[in-house]
Length: 134
Image 1 (spheres, rainbow, N blue to C red):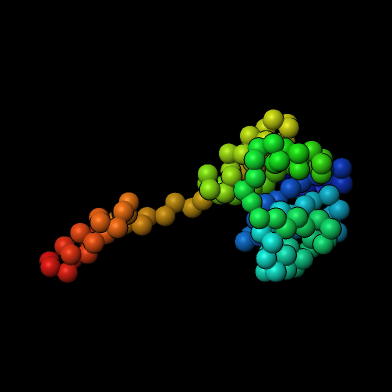
Image 2 (tube, helix red, strand yellow; image 1 turned 45 degrees about the vertical axis):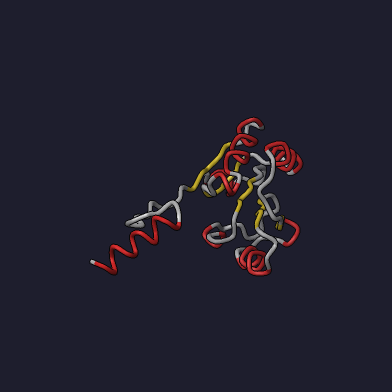
């Protein structure tokens, strides 16, 4: 990915604003950020060096067809995205990128140990009763 961010001919696409400051994009005309349409997201992109015209603020997730059309429109060559899960449309993003011949850098979610996990409120109530009653 270093090539993508140092080559003037390469176009990249970064999705998400949470860690956008980790990317050095100052002065780059061909790196785009796609983020939620929130003032805080757009501000994070501007602080990271994105030009306003390179910030795509959209509420997603989108279809694979739309993802592919967007990537083609901006002539994207590299996609940097976090694993947003099925709710975040990760399958559509990756499938669209692969169909368009775009290299993908996927940032995996950290593994979290939640201890006990419950699938419904009945199980939670039952477990709470066990804890309270010893």
